[in-house]
Length: 157
Image 1 (cartoon, rainbow, N blue to C red):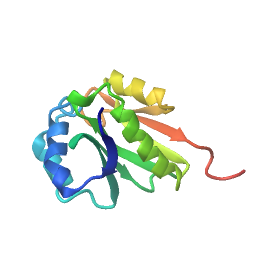
Image 2: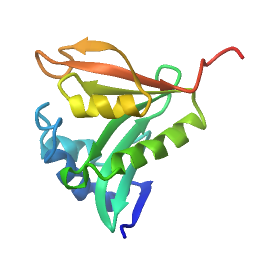
Image 3: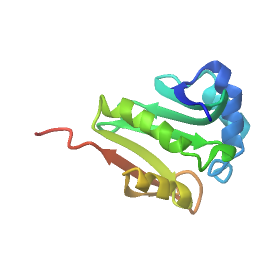
Image 4: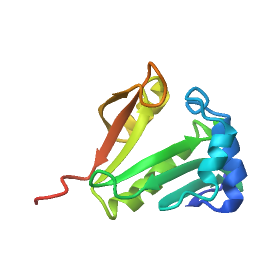
């Protein structure tokens, strides 16, 4: 039986998170390297909620949420280690993020690369809608697609 828990990221998780992200796509294809992730996570992202999913004492995934973005929050980063994919850990991590976000806001936004079919399918299954592409946003010839999941309008009944 596996022990899975979503918890706040700590400084002790930094090396495992950097290794996880540096070794996986879409980050490699987008040109991110270990040094980029080291700079992002040193110190831990300020003004953001950073969570890890821990499986049997090993960091298997990371999520970073920026609050107060377009009348909601923004899922700035979601990644699952290659060795942990297909085990429901991304869904577990995202559900934890959504519970926190929807307790204070009506919208959760995310972006996904247009070439990342696996992630696009994942988010669609979780109820996200593609809002529109941002061409040449991170790399030439590719678009980042803005996604939104909502619990309803921010104003009105």
